[in-house]
Image (tube, rainbow, N blue to C red; front, side):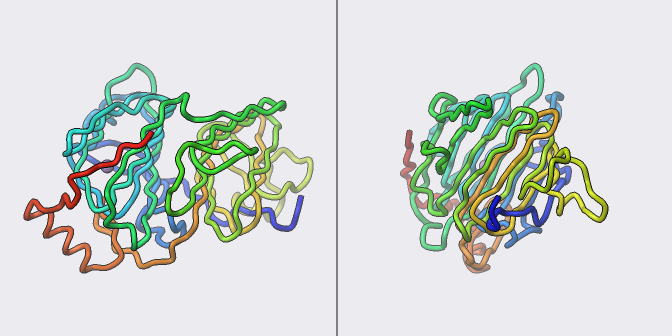
Amino acid sequence: MSASDRKVVQKFGGSETLEGAGVRLRRMFGNGEVPLLDPFLLLDNFGSSNPVDYLAGFPWHPHRGIETVTYMLNGNVEHEDSLGNSGVIGGGEVQWMSAGSGILHQEMPKRIEGTMSGFQLWVNLPRRLKMEVPSYRGLRADDIPVVRREDESVVKVVAGEFNGVEGPVRGIPVDPTYLDVQLPAGIAIRLPTRRGHTAFAQAISGSGAFGPPRSKDPPTTLRPGETPESSGATRAGETSLFDDGDAVEARAGDEGLRFLFVTGRPLREPVAWYGPIVMNTREEILEARRDLERGTFIRSQKVINEI
Ligand code: MN
């Protein structure tokens, strides 16, 4: 509608990656993309009906300086940390974990019939909060408010706001929006965004298009001279990164479209990345590695459990 609709500037198909003790996943973006998606560092897309692809899991490993956001669509991940916290993240549930100064934890998918699927997003912490007390927020499916519109589109609000409904994850430094949007065939939705905030969408299923509407063409049809990026076309599994603006318009194709919609305030700080530890300087990475060697990695014996 308006000149400030965001357009797709880049798409990511992801690359197959072995992570943890041998989990097969698709990494949609990661340290090769820094600082393009600032404040977001990494997005992993899990999805397999073969337990061999995921049962090895992510045994004991450290994190420092970041938040990890796990959203399970289907399946169960058992988590446990070095301070004795434990639980299960099940289908439709979210764990928003702020590692702060450091945690040691494990994340172990359990065998299920059918397809295990979900996402883990890494959100950077600003320099001033990288050494803060760690915290967990675990959301059950019914903790996540659902906006149902008359056109039968459904929006689950994990963080940020949609249609006046605020998500339960609040007080995150980069002021994120995290929505799970499901559009029936042919339906469009406008998602307001804050100017200057980074925004991306991860298509989960179906197909459609993002960006200013062009015409009455099916949204997945390319015109002469158009690239998939400039058309905004998307389908299951793709990540679309947007330019700046006040809103993203999404339109579902014939199969409908489900996608994650994520925005956040860029930090514009230097990134020093060592596996699951992301700091600002090389010295801080060396300090973290020394801490791991000496057993002094855990700085706070306290972990805040919220919600
Ligand atoms: Mn982890």
